[in-house]
Length: 520
Image (tube, rainbow, N blue to C red; front, side, top):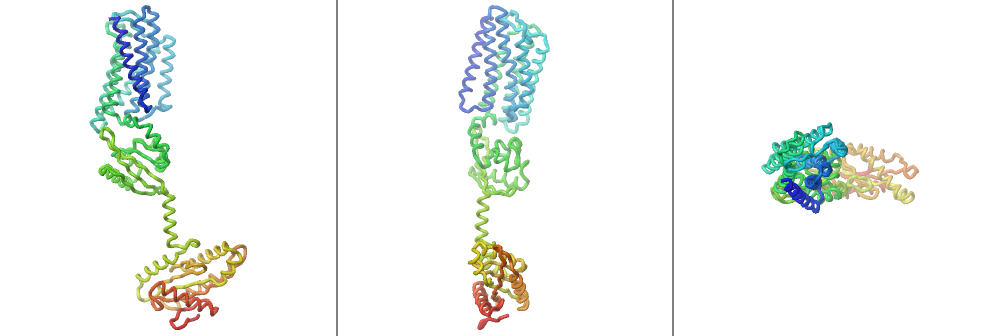
């Protein structure tokens, strides 16, 4: 039997080595792969040194190899802990999580280097047996080892019991029994039996390592843990997510964030770490959540890309929901968002200037005609609509002598004055220095004269432009609906005729008359 143990240990070492090489050769270096490889390397170190310990003819040689092999047992709980955290909780190792167990591990390695854990070997019926020292370091190792593996068992059990799908329950069950069986076999063989000098028990700790290896491989390959499954494409996802400037997110069919890039997190006002594992319901308001989930379900049901737009915090986004299927029929959606704020604003500007003057921002002819039609459709028959055609006398002099920039200033200023005086009507720019004023609900001509007198008074007040005082006066032609016409173009034409009559007579305004202009 002593001759068989080294052969068994070497055979197990070859199994571990083959597993490590296979993991190392895998193209995508995921976190889960690296953790699995770390665990396998710890077991490989242990089995290799254990084999040489059993082959050693002297106690000193066996003790030396046992001391080296113990480093594998001291280190391996760390990658096991982080592997279980990764596959059950989706948590990657971070500095704060690593600090405490790593400090304990470093302390135990130092203690073992000084002979604080294993201090002698004895010959048993199955070969050399390492005897643990009766020291605080030995008891600390037992606490450290037991606490970590017990916590892993708790994580696996919770994952098993809380799983909603059959596959997830199978995954949790395998991980739970893996850690329990491996912990029991390894602890009894290499810790409990040597401490209590039970030499009749064969050192079968190599079996514990094989249990760990088989359990992890089965859980990952056959049942495809979600975090590990995504890990196959993690390099692709990370590059795609991080180097795409627009917001991206991967959600499962329940609306839970599986992955998200920084642009998406910023658009939602959250950190990436805060979003992973959260449901859309926890991030969006109720109405938006219902709308998003309806779009996600529609995309998953139809298998086609669905698009929609929304606005958040003054920014506009277009979202494409792409249905995604995994090998185990799990469904998810990739939300590809694009900030279209500038496009929307450009479209809004185009729409605005389709109905507004580019210089003054006042309604243009198209808008005036449209609003005039609305006014006539709402007329009560007891009043009429007055249309003013207004021209600024003397504008050409200032525009030519002071420059077009100053001329633009004058037009903007006089447009503002008109808007201040016309509260219940509409002011628009017709072109050049010509403005249109439409006043609904006029009861009589005296009402019209009062309104036009206020406009004339406001426009005659001097203004500053280009560093000089500008004195302008308007010439205004007035036509009345429906007396002087029933169409917008007809009323404008008649008001234009009346305006020229006013200009020729040096009067501020003139009413249109069919046979002559009526001056005021």
